[in-house]
Image (cartoon, rainbow, N blue to C red):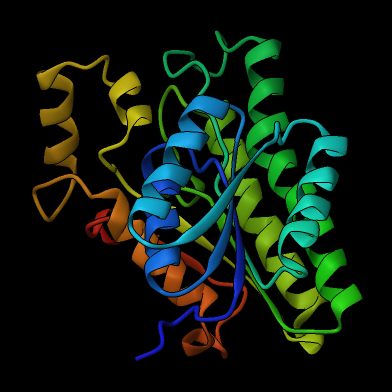
Length: 255
């Protein structure tokens, strides 16, 4: 039985750990050939090895999404490797300073969040959509926003601003290219067991417990639970879904 992404070529940024790594494994499980990208060659290479051990096909290409020339080269290298691009998960991101309030946040922290978390997504969409149009074929993009893209979070002003912006970019691109059968959606994860969350809570059990209490389901999410949503949104099963900001958050947004 063919997988949901059988025959498709997928690109994942921020694929070196956490949600990106688990999504890469799920893309491969569903039959996609993959380009895994990350700013860290070691962790990105480890993801490729895991995909290959599981019987999937993947290559690693380093890319810093804060640099337009590198993003353009990433999409070009994907096409050089596999001949085309069918779906992309724009997942690369940072948390920045999670202790800064609106008045203590530095311009450097704010600018870095915008450069990576917001403009990085825009750069990826720009070159991915251009490739879809060159091919004259349908395409699917999923961007990583956050629960913080839907609500306010104290001490997260720069991150919140960027992640709200991702949803705006997603909806706008979805409308711009709907008639070309290019679908653009976003996932909005809640508290997920990732290296990023570990950094945010400082590795403390007290911090993890606080995060669990915030979740209506009483537990943290798993990276694969976000990945499953991404797979569906990239697949033909979601052919009538575009412009969606999907919360995958254990019910947090419903509170």
